[in-house]
Image (cartoon, rainbow, N blue to C red; front, side, top):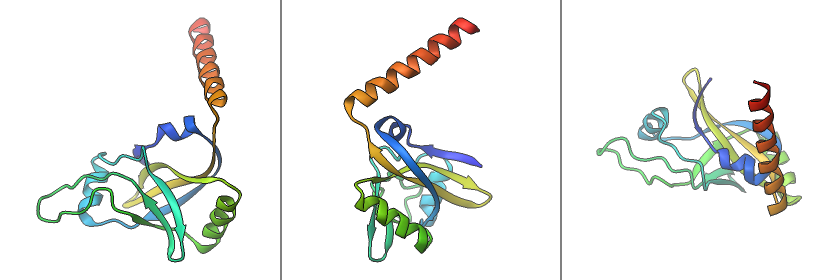
Length: 142
């Protein structure tokens, strides 16, 4: 498994409840850009509609001049209906659907999405404090 893009900000801003693996519907030039590591997941999120689950806000630049595509277009996620129902139940409970990372398995490009609950500012300060304590302990012990 080769990680192509990661949303590291998501783990800082959200409490991750559960993670789902799904495919993503892409155009040919988007595949080339993602495989070269140019995708950006920072401000992206997922939403549910009658036709399935969609990824909004993922930036994928164009790889060639011949086949232009919108770099921030909505992309359909290829996910099972039972998992869509679990996502729907979670979104009703007030959880957000956030993409975590894009990676390649064999010749397929997959994306991990998660049900997540937003952190408050004091939760973020606690995360920073815990990270600094771990770093300090690591430097002291070796």
